[in-house]
Image 1 (cartoon, rainbow, N blue to C red):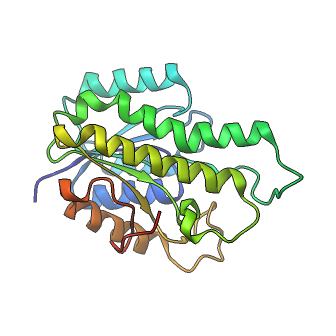
Image 2 (image 1 turned 180 degrees about the vertical axis):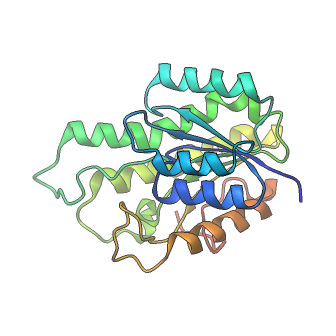
Length: 235
């Protein structure tokens, strides 16, 4: 099987870190990005073990200058990119309900969860165009499915993931002619800091499932909303 070159945002913990571990274990080449003020001790340990396959790049996905610097650093070392996984995200203020909403928090959540993956894809298009079966995977959530929503809170997070789904669909339409696959994926409810320890799915199981789906993607899948089991999710 051909080695992939994979860029993963938000890679220092949670789902992003598990993506890094599993792709490295498969012999793939990984570019892991992280915010400079975050703990990257586990990534540094991995780099010691996979020096020739793991590149660490600091980046704040919501900062234009930081995206530009990261792109320049990646392009100086690599001439192509096969997979971009827009994983970096935030929950915001989880339990604010109607009558207690927070505009600044809502804008920040949309900036990180919705707009940044779109602009990341735009920024790295030149490298994706040179990739093998290039794929853009935006880590979404069932919380972004309008059809499934019955809760009365989490306005920011739910709406930001719904917006990410729409951006993914529009990107898929825009990039279909150049054979770049784009889709949002629901990882399941996973035991992470964001998902909490109440979640029923272990990170290893979710990520191994998503990687299998990512490896199976064709241009016919572009624009779908899939979960980690490959089942299609209602918008």
